[in-house]
Image 1 (spheres, rainbow, N blue to C red):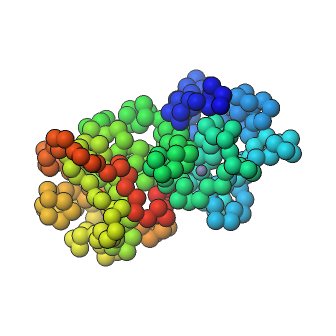
Image 2 (image 1 turned 90 degrees about the vertical axis):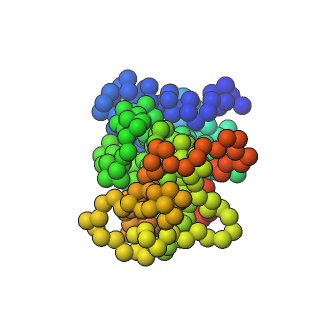
Image 3 (image 1 turned 30 degrees about the horizontal axis):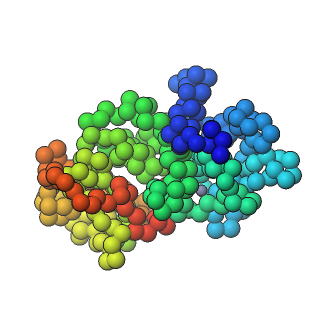
Length: 302
Ligand SMILES: [Zn+2]
């Protein structure tokens, strides 16, 4: 293992951010990850850089890091045709992450990554996939920049997330909210559902610490409460925040914002919790993973 390979995803994402900030300044957003891969990797590994980034018909995969060294062509990144721009950008970032972090330990032929691999944040279960995702998220949405865009105490609306995701970072709404949940000081939970059932949920750290989270990995599927617009697929497009009393989502009041994603038939609910609701767990025996996945084919990056 080389010294560079021992560096983790945060180190590499930070390194890339420094280069982009130095060369492009404010103009660096949204990150042109394709250009970065093609121009940066020849400096890192002149003998085997990334030489091509292209759309392909990929059977059952969203992206691939292709080993073309036997043909003297270094490595290539392929992404599935027909993706949204946000998913395309994240996928290329994910494969660049594999190149930087894992190419010396790559399986024969390279990496083939399925849609669920792009939604894997569980390091124990799938270290390489979760590291590639962590790199991609931190490359596309650097935490220092996200902190400048959203003050830590701000109760951000889904509408603002939508703008940041579309205009600044060029990523999916869910990818942007997930990154914010890593750093916010507010108590909030993102719940992604389909047909009235919770697919997965992620709590911010303050929410998790106060015991506000959903266990979606357990055997029985968790239903969306009937009072939520995500329960029955009805949604008034003009509706904004919906206040729920205690007992609807949690044993405390929450304010819910929902959008329905027609792409994957998903309900995306952002639950805003009060500052003083819940109770701090003194010595939690067991906390769930921040991102608790029941069904990984949930279009986390839709
Ligand atoms: Zn992968």
